[in-house]
Image 1 (cartoon, one colour):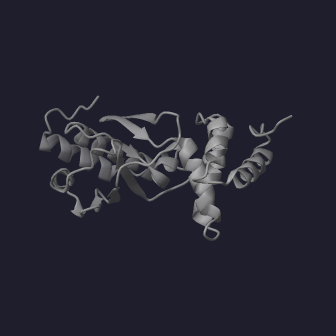
Image 2 (cartoon, helix red, strand yellow; image 1 turned 90 degrees about the horizontal axis):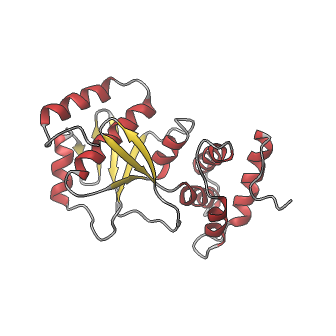
Length: 214
């Protein structure tokens, strides 16, 4: 539901002014994501918010990423460099070819999204159209792995804890059987670490542990 029309630069400039004026960093990031996704969607390219940026959206700012990470959904259709530069130029982006400063935020356009989960990308409705979010099951298992290997990583642990908390309280729909499958897969092999962290947070929140067998 992009409302930008036929890539009208005046509308884009007004949208950027509104983003700069936004004082809530998470809302600012969500609106910018909606704008970026709308512009690329008009050119036939769907993007998905990944990494810490997606976790920030899922947790409504309980975890703050500080930047916006976007990947093309279709692995067979990477973003041509000229197109990337052109769209980011419309947004007044400084930098490139993969990282820009736009409206006071850093935006990274990464390679095609990597996902092993069989669940669907989640959707967030923004002012310029919907925003796809990385599957929380992928994010959770990946962040738990990074929090432990190759050495302890406090930031990744904070990401994982924040995402698990909103999953356990029902704020985000997480398929825990899929989390278990991914964590036991050869790509991750970290179910014990996931199980331990989920149990710890479930105790803290006094809520049901989805991995309990009782």
